[in-house]
Length: 507
Image (cartoon, rainbow, N blue to C red; front, side, top):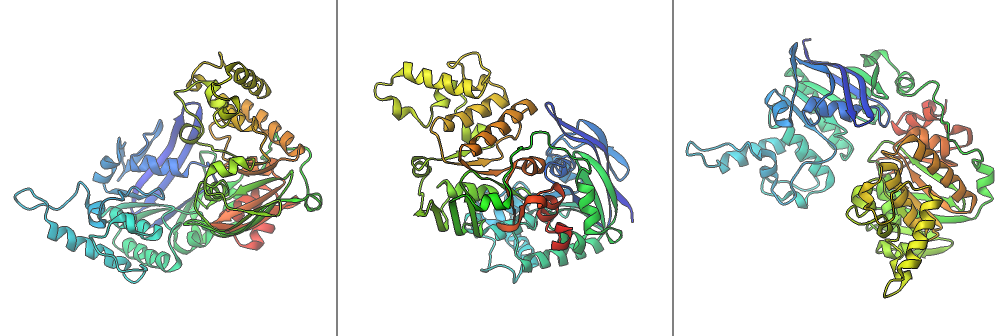
């Protein structure tokens, strides 16, 4: 087989964060290479560099042995590279046909769009997945009316419509059911015979061993292993993905074990919680417990937190201290002393054009009356800032003037003012410096000691292992594995996240 694409010693930095320090990958014609790694290993960054979404900072890409660099996805597409990302790029208001052929519509000699040809080509593409849709799809159907699995298939057809030489499938099976996955793999086998090269990024071990010819493993931005898939086991792949001597220096010293947890009263019970993403989640969390949500990104962790907070409509029941609740809006949850701390502080946590004072007191302004008792508000905000060691020029400065770590302290501080009993944390330390993380970990430990209940999702596996009393590993919208006591190890967490067999998880 001929090597089509080679990524050599790729480096990518985002400010002071190194996403890739030595990424390497080779894919040949007629081959499927599985690109695997734990959370934050650099898989998506490497895929985006190959696809032209991100520009590399070091190393080189070789296409047919010739150095190339793609400044945009359009440039990569012109060279025969197409990508199916899990984050859909479809425009809801447009039809299936319009989405697939956008900017590439077949034209009449007069220069107008040949609608008949657009329709015929779209029909041929839809036939590739015929029999796997819940309803028959036609080219004129609006994308906004489609189910998540149907949208994912249209995303795949959009990539295939350019007849690429190299196809990147980045978690492309995550939204598909078993019939659709089987059909996709049948098509992949056909594409291999025609000489296409496929880069397959997946969190599902069973799929990796089912479809891949070779593998390449990333860990902490470095390629640490590669070879033929038939010459490696699940256990060996998992071991390559994790640090052998990983040490979490900020672990809680008084983590509660299973026996101690069983003696604490149940604070929250969730039964059969279902949304477009969640598939009947059941869980209990006890007062004073720090419960971790693990698993690869996009497995339903954020939807679970948002559902409990009243941000997403759901089916099922939520019970707090023996009383059924159904929050139809976050305001209902806030009144019940529930707080939500997002990781994306720019979009969900802060008003960047407003002052630090206004942001700290964002959920609490009503307490200061009309007209607002500004002196009292200022005193309260000062107290919150001091309790969190907030480094700032002054409360009247815009919150945008703060560093990332201090900005995240404001996000947390605005809720602590309200003395919540249940904290829902959505990857809260993402993009935060090490020093601020250490302060945050200490804060969580103190809150648990005070009897607060915390549900904590993190994309950092080491963080979960070091902090949590118990970890629920989510996979495809449900809880796959529960880790307690000595089972809380990074190896077990990674293995469960990737869908490894029970024997591999608990060895």
